[in-house]
Length: 404
Image 1 (tube, rainbow, N blue to C red):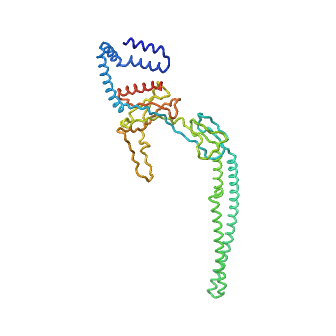
Image 2 (image 1 turned 135 degrees about the horizontal axis):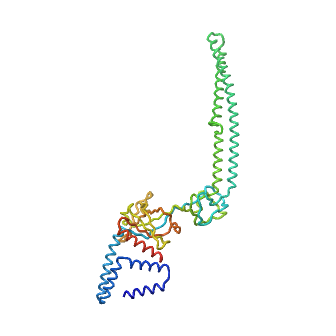
Image 3 (image 1 turned 120 degrees about the horizontal axis):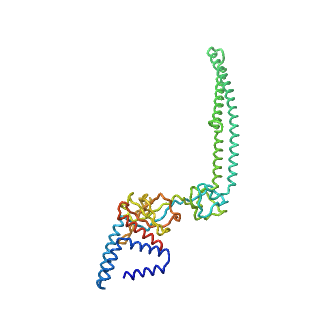
C-alpha cells in the first residue's frame, strides 16, 4: 500500500511542474518525514493493511470518530489559546488633499501612484489674481502709511492748538480772578465780572476740546510708528495675500503616495474641496477582526504571526499594539427617537467580532497596500505547545495562499 502511495506521489510530481504544487508537496513531504506523528501513521497503515475488510471498516470508522472528537475539542481550545482569523487587513491613513484657495488648475506635477517627498508640489492653481491681490494689499499698506504720516502732522498741530488754548485759558483765568477780587471791593460792575467768568469758561472748554482732538489722533496712531490701526490692517492684508499666493501651489504633507489620480489641467479647484487621495508611506499597520470570546484573554504577552495574501509561503512576526473598545453597531447618536430593538429569529446568532491592531518595528513589505488581506494567528510565546500549533496553522494557511 505504501509502495502504491509513494508511486502515485512520484507520478504526480513528475507530471506536475508548478511552483504552487511543488511548494505544497514539499511541505507535505517535509511534514510526513519530520513530524513525530509520521511513525504512528506508518504503524497504523501497516496494522490496517494486515486486517480483513470488515475490521478495516471498523477501524476507519472509529478512527474518524476519534479524529472528529479530537478536532472538535482542539478547535474549542485553540480558539481560546491560539485564535486565528482570515479577516486581516492592512490599514493606513488616507489624506484627502484639498487646496486652500479656489481657481483653475494650471499644472499637475505628479502622476498616478507616484511616490513623493514632503514639500513636493502636487499641483498648481492659477496665481494671477492672487498676485494682483498682493499688489493691491501693498498699495493699501502704502496708503495707510501716508495716512499715518498725516496723523503725525495732525498730532503736531493738535499739540500747538493745545498750547495756544492753554495760554488763552491761563490769561482768562487770571483776568477772572483779578476782577473777582475787585468785585469784592465794589470797584467794578457785576456785568464786568460776569463777562470775565464767561471768557474763562469758554477758554477752558476750548482747551478741553483741543486735548480731546489730540486723544483721538493718538488713538489712531497706536503705540508707535507703524502701529496705527490702518497700517496694521494693511499689513494683515499683505500677509493674507502672500498666504493665498503661496497656497496656489499645493504641497505634499509628508512622504507618501498619490493614488487614484483623476485631476487634470483645466479643472476648477474650489477651496477646501478634496481633489487628491494621499497615503503616507509610514502609516501602514495591520488589523485583525476576531470573535470577542477568542481575544477575551489576549493581553500584551501575546504575539502574532501574519500570512499576507500577497506573499504566499511567507510568515511575518508582529506584536499586539491595541484592541478596539467599540464597534459601530453599538454607537449611539441622540436623535430624539425611541429605542430600535433588533429582532433576530436565529437560535444561534452570529458572534460579535472585535478589532485587534498589530505593529512591527520592521518596514512593511513593499507589495502591500491599504486594504491588503491577511491571515492572522495570535499565540502566547511562553506556551510551547500553542506556539508550535500556531506556527503550524499559519504556515499551512500561508501555503494555501498559493491556491487562493
